[in-house]
Length: 261
Ligand code: NDP
Image 1: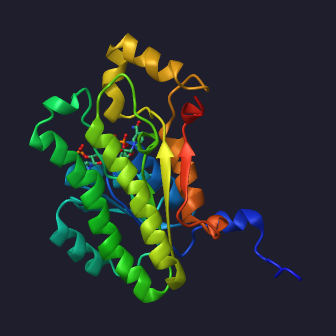
Image 2: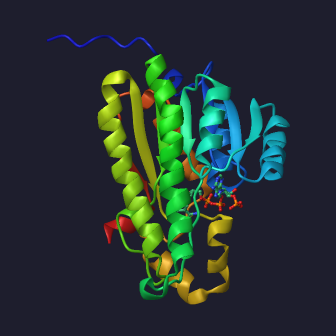
């Protein structure tokens, strides 16, 4: 059997010229790095965040580097707003579902309704509203690519901080990713996820004031350090590109080896 010759040079498969991308929670942290990565690869990027001013400032910063990035306010928990934006922006090639929150150090037996629901509403429900609204338009056009931001917390139970609702939300994101991948693969839409370790963002700012916590996190990581936002963005760039054309339903760990132990 002869294999089909692939004419595209390998490095060109990472290029996103002519592609339109939307990133949720793009105002800072991992989402902001993802906007930069996709735009540097040539995509036209819509940077969204629930904080309109944060989004505007972040997009302006990337434009000052010559990148094609515009800002839109979007709260992923607002189903109507998500659907309206999907209708407004038209055909997208890439969706990165990054918006998420963590609420840690809450023992499960003491967790109140809001501490549970707020995390599930953003990390799982909001991510699904985006997959549904933007995904159905990708299905209509017969192609598209979604990258969800999961977590190693979808595989392991973090310690010592208790965060059952966060861990459950990320495990659900992983299984949702696989479910959508299986449903949508025949219609040209790929759905993958990245599962990062502890990353240096505001979400984790509290670790710098807690030596014991930092010792657990770093001590539990074979690479002996936290990750940087650009190291997650690189993986998302790969998954969003044609270099990952055979990948759908994959949950790609970027965890410094944390899950090896
Ligand atoms: P940050 O808190 O630094 O940034 C998250 C951004 O998302 C903020 O701008 C935040 O806005 C925004 N956001 C929150 N809720 C919503 C919403 N409802 N709609 C739209 N935007 C929203 O987080 P990270 O960059 O660290 O995390 C990004 C993703 O990566 C999350 O899904 C997180 O779970 C995941 N992740 C993070 C890890 C880490 O160690 N940092 C490890 C593994 C996964 P606001 O300021 O208003 O909250």
